[in-house]
Amino acid sequence: MSRALTVIKSSHPEPGGAVTVAMTLLAIGVGHRGWAILGVFLAVGATQLSVGWVNDWLDADRDRATGRTDKPIASGAVSRRTVGTAGLTASLAIPLLGLPFGLLPTVLITLVGVSALLYDWPLKSTVFSVAPYLVAFGLLPAFVVVALPGHPAPPVWLVAAGALLGGGAHFANVLPDLADDAATGVRGLPHRLGATGSSISAALLLLGATLTLVLGPPGPPSWAGWAAATASVVVLPLGWYATRRAKGRGVAMFRAVILVALIDVLLLIFSGRVV
Image (cartoon, rainbow, N blue to C red; front, top):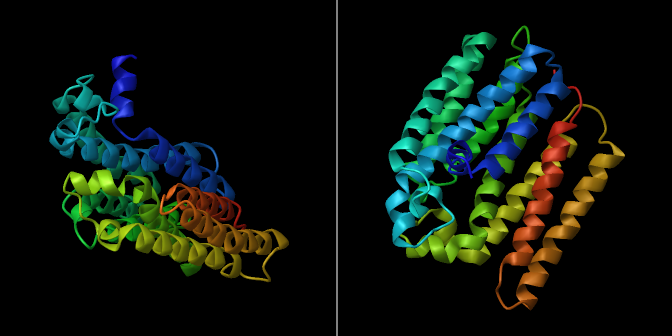
């Protein structure tokens, strides 16, 4: 693997890439054209690279202690200093990439970056670990809308849906790693609630995001929206039931909440005219 790819691997490219692509597709959906689409992609991408690299830089000693050979720093594939420098560069680039859109979009995308970094430190191991997700994911679609010509105000339902989706993603993301995280001293809100509490929290937040995206836009909900809401209501209890049948293993519930999160992302992208 080349050095550049190794550094990219330290940024948690899968979730970061998914968020960046989703917001870029939302940008196209709300009316961005030409260079603005690339601008949204780069600005959102910088926030995701920043939080991913800084996370691995901060967790380097913990990852080494627990033998996380899947992490490039812990495995020795890349130096901690290199990843830290990359994280600093991406963090400083966030406001610069927002400037072409104007002052308010710059402030919003910068707040996204700051919120994400506050998760890395010091909130990741506190009862407030979900707060940065709520803020950052609520502000991301707001940035996409405000960055349009004329800087229109984002609809409240879009911001609320983004925040709920982000909160659900936080609980879903840690479900498979609760035990490993606890062993390394991570005590965020999901770890305090445990597997059952985190599963319920993820399900309720994602279901809330689904209903907000279905009922929030003006006009009657579409048949696709009702179908998505119905699927969410069916999938989550099935995931819960399968988890109970498997005597506590959380894989089925994790897959259920990920499926609902995917439904929410598609609803967000294809939410229609928002301004």
